[in-house]
Length: 407
Image (cartoon, rainbow, N blue to C red):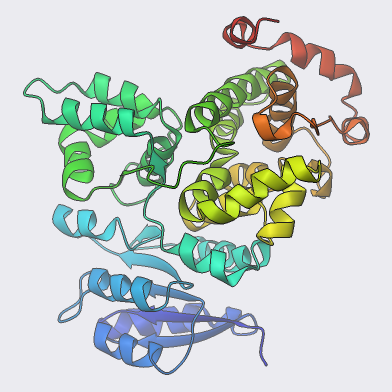
């Protein structure tokens, strides 16, 4: 069987399909490409043959791109979904937020299109579990804390709703933050700058757009998973933001440039989103994982592999890859427990997040990790020539965290 990635391109303008066919000819050794001239033709093709990825225009007569991709999401959940579209109405954009993983604007540079498709196709090598691939591909949001969700709804419905207060509420929740960052850094709303600051992201999107996204499109969902004795949503949030803050300070201590420091802060906040997904979506299996760490005295990663077959690091990186987050952030999520597996040996976003995560766990071990504390990989630091920097990074520990942990 061919190991080529199967990609379906859909556009009602024949000249655009012909241009895509011509300009992507160099990828024929890697991709098995099919071209459809309408939404209905695409559905007919999908019914006969499996695909790894669909790239569709939005504005089409009959079955438009949003309807097509929604249908694809329901019937073929393992398939990645990308929109490649020109100017469209705000209503269509809001409708497309749910079923679309990534949004590219026309005209689209061919190298950008190739890179985007290549990155998405490579994700299947990161997460081989097809069951996990399917349900992660269907996720439109990450669960958020009910108290913050209710507070946000109340604020948005008030007559004197404040964009500043909305930003402050969203920035306190990992699930809300990751969705806002996905949207503001995509081509959905045409904001042509990288944004990692949540209040800034909310401000750029604007109060009316945020209202529409939250109240009408419902881009946020409350955490409704079965309560897990050893998984606390509050503790998860505290740890995520502590790692984000400490990783940012470690990156500053190593004189990283501002963009990479921003990536480090985001990756630190999101490094454990895979745990949130697993705890919310397969809580019974994840309860077994957490129990196994104690009964066998093994690490969480070891228990996840035994019970689920994949780790929270892989799950989180897979979702953020689908949603178009940058390579440094994806790498930090995928390897924050095994940084030595990355071939490029230099201080990076991954290094800062890895160190901050280990050092935070040393200060405040979580319930299921007390018997098997994480240890810093001194060989990894030595290989990077950073063995003498660990004491500097420890001193960078945020005062707020020191006070909370009484050290």
